[in-house]
Image (cartoon, rainbow, N blue to C red):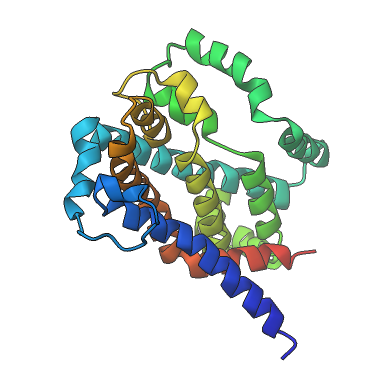
Length: 271
C-alpha cells in the first residue's frame, strides 16, 4: 500500500507522455481540415494512412532519415568503443596523473557545448569537413559522460579475474574483449541508448555543419520542412514526419530496456 502513490504517479506521468505521442499519430491520420477543428475531436472521421507518404513527397525525407541513421549508428558505435577503452584505462591501469586526468575529463561536463561550437566549427572547416559525414560524426566520437559511466561500471569487475588472465598470458585487449566486456554489456547498452537518443535529436551542430540536403539529418530536415510554410494543410504532413522520426528511438528503447535498467542499476550500486 505504501508504494501505491508512487505507482499512481508513475502511471499518470506515463499516460501523459503517451497521450502526446497518441495525439501526434491521430493528427497524422486526419484530413487537414480536422486537425485544428473546433471542437477538437481525437479520432479522425477518415483514416488517411496515405498521409505517411506526404513527407517523402514534399522533401527528400528518405535522405534525411538515412543521414540520421548513418550518423547516429556511427557516433554510437564510436562512443561505445572509445568510452569503454578509456573507462578500462581509468579503472584498471595505474599510472601517474590518472586521477587528475579523470577529473579533467569530468570537468568538461561543466562546459556548455555552445561555448566550444565556434572553435570546433573553425577546426572542422580547416579540415574540410563542412558538409560531410566526417564533420557530423568525428566531433561526437566520445563523451565525458560515457567515460565516467564505463569507468564506474568496470570498477565492479574483480581485479582477481584480470590478474589471473595476465598470469595465463592474456594481453590487455584479450582481457578487455573476453573478460571485461561480457561483464559490462548492460552499461554499454545503456550508454548506446543515451548516445543514440542524444545524437538523433541533435539539431544545432548538424545545422552548423550540414547546409545541403545530402548531409542534413532529421531534426534539421524537419525544421527546413516547417520553414517551407506548409500552413494548416501541412500539419498532417509534419505530424507524420515527426512520428516517423521518433520511431527508431522507441524501437531501440524497447529492445534495450532490460539492459538499460540493469546498466543503470549496476552503475548506481557502485560506491
